[in-house]
Image 1 (tube, helix red, strand yellow):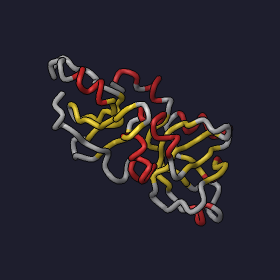
Image 2: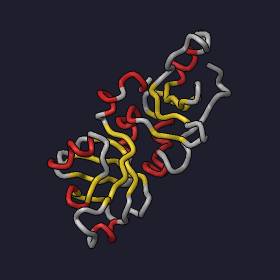
Image 3: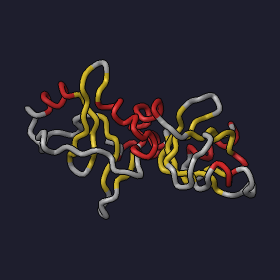
Image 4: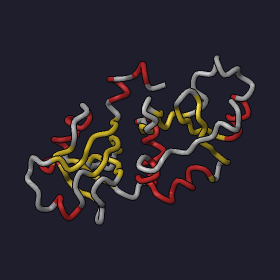
Length: 178
Protein backbone atom coordinates (compact mmCIF):
# COMPACT_ATOMS: atom_id res chain seq x y z
CA UNK A 1 0.00 0.00 0.00
CA UNK A 2 1.54 3.29 -1.04
CA UNK A 3 1.95 5.95 1.66
CA UNK A 4 0.71 8.57 -0.80
CA UNK A 5 -2.75 7.00 -0.86
CA UNK A 6 -3.82 8.79 2.33
CA UNK A 7 -7.32 10.01 3.00
CA UNK A 8 -9.18 11.34 5.97
CA UNK A 9 -12.92 10.97 6.49
CA UNK A 10 -14.75 13.89 4.95
CA UNK A 11 -16.74 16.48 6.83
CA UNK A 12 -20.26 15.35 7.55
CA UNK A 13 -19.10 11.87 8.55
CA UNK A 14 -16.87 10.98 11.46
CA UNK A 15 -15.41 14.51 11.53
CA UNK A 16 -18.79 15.98 12.40
CA UNK A 17 -19.38 13.29 15.02
CA UNK A 18 -16.11 13.69 16.91
CA UNK A 19 -14.87 17.13 15.80
CA UNK A 20 -11.35 18.05 16.84
CA UNK A 21 -11.07 14.73 18.71
CA UNK A 22 -10.14 13.11 15.39
CA UNK A 23 -6.57 14.12 16.26
CA UNK A 24 -6.76 11.65 19.18
CA UNK A 25 -7.24 8.83 16.66
CA UNK A 26 -4.00 9.71 14.87
CA UNK A 27 -1.68 10.58 17.75
CA UNK A 28 -2.24 7.77 20.23
CA UNK A 29 -0.13 6.77 23.23
CA UNK A 30 0.52 3.34 21.66
CA UNK A 31 1.89 4.79 18.42
CA UNK A 32 0.98 6.85 15.39
CA UNK A 33 -2.02 5.80 13.35
CA UNK A 34 -3.18 6.94 9.92
CA UNK A 35 -6.00 6.75 7.40
CA UNK A 36 -5.36 5.16 4.01
CA UNK A 37 -7.45 4.80 0.89
CA UNK A 38 -7.51 1.35 -0.73
CA UNK A 39 -10.04 0.39 -3.43
CA UNK A 40 -12.56 3.15 -2.58
CA UNK A 41 -12.46 2.29 1.14
CA UNK A 42 -10.79 4.27 3.94
CA UNK A 43 -8.84 2.17 6.43
CA UNK A 44 -7.47 3.08 9.85
CA UNK A 45 -4.19 1.44 10.80
CA UNK A 46 -0.95 1.90 12.69
CA UNK A 47 2.13 3.11 10.85
CA UNK A 48 3.80 -0.16 11.85
CA UNK A 49 1.06 -2.13 10.08
CA UNK A 50 1.25 0.28 7.12
CA UNK A 51 4.91 -0.61 6.61
CA UNK A 52 4.11 -4.32 6.73
CA UNK A 53 1.21 -3.89 4.27
CA UNK A 54 3.57 -2.16 1.83
CA UNK A 55 5.29 -5.52 1.24
CA UNK A 56 2.02 -7.15 0.08
CA UNK A 57 1.02 -6.67 -3.59
CA UNK A 58 -1.98 -4.30 -3.88
CA UNK A 59 -4.05 -6.89 -5.75
CA UNK A 60 -3.56 -9.40 -2.91
CA UNK A 61 -4.28 -6.94 -0.10
CA UNK A 62 -7.84 -7.40 1.17
CA UNK A 63 -8.00 -5.05 4.17
CA UNK A 64 -4.88 -3.32 5.50
CA UNK A 65 -6.59 -2.17 8.71
CA UNK A 66 -10.01 -1.37 10.13
CA UNK A 67 -12.45 -0.14 7.50
CA UNK A 68 -13.85 3.26 8.50
CA UNK A 69 -16.05 3.61 5.47
CA UNK A 70 -16.17 3.80 1.73
CA UNK A 71 -16.70 6.22 -1.10
CA UNK A 72 -19.86 5.63 -3.11
CA UNK A 73 -20.00 5.84 -6.89
CA UNK A 74 -21.13 9.46 -6.52
CA UNK A 75 -17.97 10.11 -4.43
CA UNK A 76 -19.79 10.57 -1.12
CA UNK A 77 -18.21 9.04 1.97
CA UNK A 78 -20.32 6.47 3.82
CA UNK A 79 -19.21 5.71 7.37
CA UNK A 80 -19.09 2.00 8.22
CA UNK A 81 -20.20 0.40 11.48
CA UNK A 82 -16.71 -1.10 11.80
CA UNK A 83 -15.52 2.39 12.87
CA UNK A 84 -17.95 2.54 15.79
CA UNK A 85 -15.58 1.24 18.47
CA UNK A 86 -13.00 3.87 17.53
CA UNK A 87 -15.35 6.85 17.19
CA UNK A 88 -17.80 6.27 20.07
CA UNK A 89 -15.40 7.23 22.91
CA UNK A 90 -14.72 10.59 21.26
CA UNK A 91 -18.24 11.48 20.12
CA UNK A 92 -19.30 15.04 20.86
CA UNK A 93 -22.97 14.41 20.19
CA UNK A 94 -24.80 11.36 21.50
CA UNK A 95 -28.31 9.99 21.48
CA UNK A 96 -29.58 7.31 23.86
CA UNK A 97 -32.50 5.14 22.82
CA UNK A 98 -34.99 3.47 25.13
CA UNK A 99 -34.75 -0.32 25.50
CA UNK A 100 -37.94 -0.83 23.49
CA UNK A 101 -36.48 1.04 20.52
CA UNK A 102 -33.04 -0.59 20.46
CA UNK A 103 -34.16 -3.53 18.36
CA UNK A 104 -35.90 -1.28 15.86
CA UNK A 105 -32.71 0.75 15.41
CA UNK A 106 -30.64 -2.44 15.11
CA UNK A 107 -32.90 -3.56 12.25
CA UNK A 108 -32.01 -0.39 10.34
CA UNK A 109 -34.89 1.91 11.28
CA UNK A 110 -34.71 5.58 12.22
CA UNK A 111 -35.11 6.68 15.86
CA UNK A 112 -38.52 8.14 16.66
CA UNK A 113 -39.22 10.69 19.40
CA UNK A 114 -41.08 7.98 21.35
CA UNK A 115 -37.88 5.89 21.44
CA UNK A 116 -35.56 8.74 22.42
CA UNK A 117 -34.16 8.37 25.92
CA UNK A 118 -31.69 11.30 26.02
CA UNK A 119 -29.84 13.56 23.63
CA UNK A 120 -26.72 15.65 24.12
CA UNK A 121 -27.55 19.27 24.88
CA UNK A 122 -27.10 21.72 21.95
CA UNK A 123 -27.14 19.05 19.24
CA UNK A 124 -27.83 20.83 15.97
CA UNK A 125 -30.12 19.53 13.23
CA UNK A 126 -28.24 17.33 10.73
CA UNK A 127 -25.37 16.84 13.17
CA UNK A 128 -23.67 13.44 13.15
CA UNK A 129 -24.44 11.49 16.34
CA UNK A 130 -23.48 8.19 17.93
CA UNK A 131 -26.50 6.18 19.07
CA UNK A 132 -26.23 4.43 22.45
CA UNK A 133 -28.44 2.15 24.49
CA UNK A 134 -29.53 3.46 27.89
CA UNK A 135 -26.79 1.21 29.33
CA UNK A 136 -24.17 3.27 27.41
CA UNK A 137 -23.45 0.57 24.82
CA UNK A 138 -22.74 2.11 21.38
CA UNK A 139 -25.26 0.79 18.84
CA UNK A 140 -24.46 2.78 15.71
CA UNK A 141 -24.38 6.11 13.90
CA UNK A 142 -26.99 8.51 12.77
CA UNK A 143 -27.74 12.09 11.82
CA UNK A 144 -29.92 14.25 14.04
CA UNK A 145 -33.16 14.97 12.19
CA UNK A 146 -34.11 17.55 14.81
CA UNK A 147 -32.12 19.79 17.12
CA UNK A 148 -32.22 19.20 20.89
CA UNK A 149 -34.74 22.02 21.30
CA UNK A 150 -36.98 20.71 18.52
CA UNK A 151 -36.93 17.20 20.02
CA UNK A 152 -38.64 18.52 23.14
CA UNK A 153 -41.77 19.62 21.31
CA UNK A 154 -42.25 17.27 18.33
CA UNK A 155 -44.86 14.56 17.86
CA UNK A 156 -43.97 11.14 19.39
CA UNK A 157 -43.95 9.57 15.90
CA UNK A 158 -41.57 12.15 14.42
CA UNK A 159 -38.13 10.98 13.34
CA UNK A 160 -35.41 12.49 15.55
CA UNK A 161 -32.38 10.53 14.26
CA UNK A 162 -31.83 9.28 10.72
CA UNK A 163 -30.24 5.82 10.72
CA UNK A 164 -26.82 5.49 9.05
CA UNK A 165 -25.21 2.35 10.45
CA UNK A 166 -25.74 -0.05 13.35
CA UNK A 167 -24.08 -3.12 14.88
CA UNK A 168 -26.83 -5.31 13.41
CA UNK A 169 -25.02 -4.89 10.08
CA UNK A 170 -22.39 -7.34 11.30
CA UNK A 171 -25.08 -10.02 10.86
CA UNK A 172 -27.11 -8.52 7.99
CA UNK A 173 -24.17 -7.52 5.77
CA UNK A 174 -21.26 -9.64 6.97
CA UNK A 175 -20.06 -10.43 3.44
CA UNK A 176 -19.69 -6.75 2.43
CA UNK A 177 -18.04 -5.30 5.56
CA UNK A 178 -14.44 -5.98 4.49
